[in-house]
Image 1 (cartoon, rainbow, N blue to C red):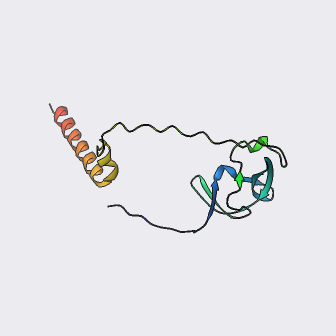
Image 2 (tube, one colour):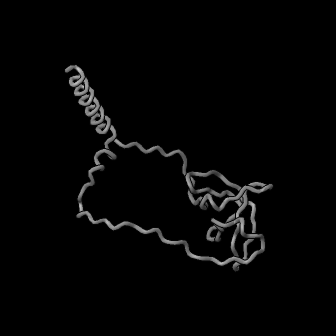
Image 3 (spheres, rainbow, N blue to C red):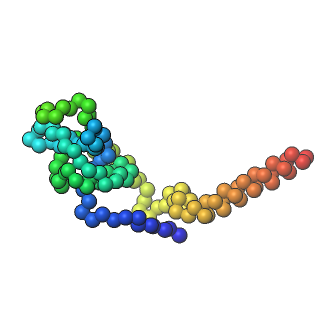
Length: 133
């Protein structure tokens, strides 16, 4: 049995990687890139969820922000925009519909618990039988 709880929903939220947000003396800030120039801009953060941050004010959709190397950038400095490296994805060599050995245990935590308790019980029974000889 899987349960999903929706805690909040923000339609049309502006989301940036958390690494783009820097804490400055005036609060959270980001470097926005325009015409290969880095401009420091104050933003208002709504919340951070994992590695993503929702920006409430200070950014517009589609603007480029610097997500790494901010310490080497100064406001008004020239920057070069580059595409991030694409992560390598392992090829799935299993046949279609094949199930991994771990799938039942990941999808069924109660079954996993029962199997582990059974193994523990069998181990304890064997231990005490051997110890009694």
